[in-house]
Length: 226
Image (cartoon, rainbow, N blue to C red):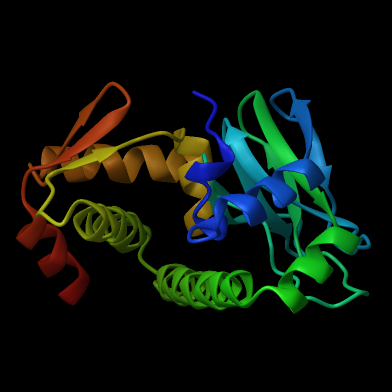
């Protein structure tokens, strides 16, 4: 479902007048599944905000393997430019589903960040959250055991859901395929599928259509200690 500009966390707290000024600068564009939004190394001439659908941010390693850095959904943004007039993209973006995004030109983006304290604070918060996300990613891919990588990924999802809802969660909604999960934690799809099935046989999780139910969170945590 498409969202409105009021639902974008990056613009949270802006007065209606300033929000309307931003809205007038946004340009909407739709992409089909598999289409590229931008490529690593290209000049960052605009940033985008996801209005509907899902977009993956990724890099290609020297061995040709793709590593997904993060998956953006409704309200998320690719913004990594701290407000510089010259900036290059450090990663690539591809539509995981049919999606609609709002683009904000570099000129407008740089001006807004430099002149609006609230947006500058939003950008700082975004950078801090992204740093935390990437730190967790580094920890995941540093684990040599693929089963531990999958367990760590599921625990991180559950922890994030806990923070968002304010309550202890037991269900992880799977809005991604096994291929996407594999790319996220740096393993092949067959290995991801095999390890998910192994965790289910251990009665730690239950795989259901479009979601994973964590049956034994403590068991997953103990798995990481071995």
